[in-house]
Amino acid sequence: MFETLKDILVNKLKVSPDTITAEATPEEIDLDSLAIVELSLVLEKELGLAVSEDELSEAGTVGDIVRLMDERSARV
Amino acid sequence: MSGFEAAVTGLGLVTPAGVGVRQNWEAVCSGVSRAADDPALRACPVRISCRVPDFDAGELLGQRRAHRLDPFVQFALVAAKEALADAGLDPETWDGARVGVVLGTADGGTVTMEQQNQTFLDEGARWVSPLLLPMHLPNMLAGQVAMEFGATGPNLVVATACASGATAIGTARDLLAADRCDVVLTGGSEAMLGRVTMAGFAQMGALSRRNDEPALASRPFDVDRDGFVAGEGAGILVLERAADARARGARSHGRIIGHGATADAHHMTKPHPQGRGTEAAVRRALADAGTDVRDIGHVNAHGTSTPLNDRVEGQMLGRVLPGSPLVTSTKGVTGHLLGASGAVEAALTLLSLQHRLVPPTANLTNPDPDIDLRIPTEPTACAAELALSNSFGFGGQNTVLVAAAP
Image 1 (cartoon, chains in turn green, red):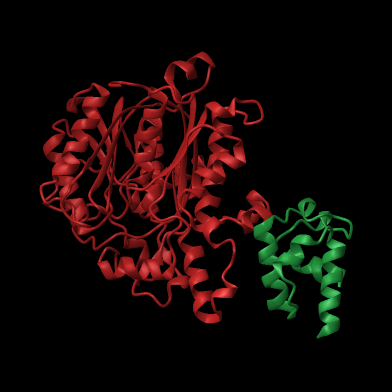
Image 2: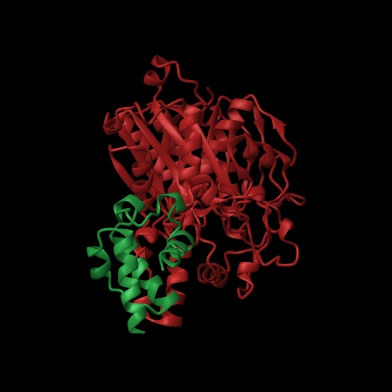
């Protein structure tokens, strides 16, 4: 799932691939509040995963976002 | 204020004639129109435009930055980088509080708005991008330039339709004269080639309908002209007080020494039939420069290639300027860059004075017999020290700048 998220961050939000690690914070990969909303929309549109912008805002790291995605996909 | 000299110490151009000042100067001197068939406009009555060639925003600005910017801001950032490097100014070391940004655009992020409107219609409101407004708002043009270069002085965007870029330059000069800042990044940018917008221009009857011969479509002052060809791009100028520029040993492309701004107060789109507002703008600009009509040796006309503009402007210039200056419209090559045109053409006017060469008007094969002007069809030597750059907008907003040789 980490690779799936990385792929979306790189190809849809154009985040620089070298910055994306499981430990990186949203700030470290240049995700501001607008990009968080954008990511929430892309996750739903591309993967059918409903992860709200509030949940993404509370995620401390990329790894936390991956965990949210894992939870949602298990539920599907 | 009269005679206040703003030195132009840096130029940057991104236009259908190329990315970079040198490329633009060579292209406009070639006299070859850049208008071409535009596949993105397939559903429109007019399917030709002038697009910026070989512009890779991700390469020039970084993928992440480019992703969050409408083309109208992308063009301006690239042109501003060129202009600052040309001026020899380093945003790492300057006092940003004394650096202003004054830019013009007619419409802002047109293409982003059109794309997101399509998303709304096709998929629903909840899929509209959160970046829509930050990418679309016209004022983002100056805001993004400030963010890129740490310019924290006065920051604004002006809108006078197709005069916007020239209005911005005149306003920037006013800020320098009033000592509100020491350096101003000024000019205009436009990226209005969205299909809804272009359909709107076509419905107005403003565009040339030469879909089958695009290279002949933009033909200012020609008797067979039938409308303009819309273009996109940006022109950025670095302005400083002439004394400051001299004191830091900066090279100058020339000076902006006069600015006249008027309104026709006549009609939404048609110029006043006797050119009342545009004539007043020329006279005010000359008075502001403290110069006489006889001193003007060159005019970069608004010259859109529409039947009405070129007749009214051409007759006004013939009436007001008795010295038979060399007149050109570089829109024959570049197309009409709308809110950017006044800035791009101010830059080209300065380059004409600097190179002592007036670029030709493309496609002028049969000059309109109702217009009595000297309009070269080849690059023509010109010893002028002073020139006018005219820019007139829908809504009857007129701006004339007086440029002086270095």
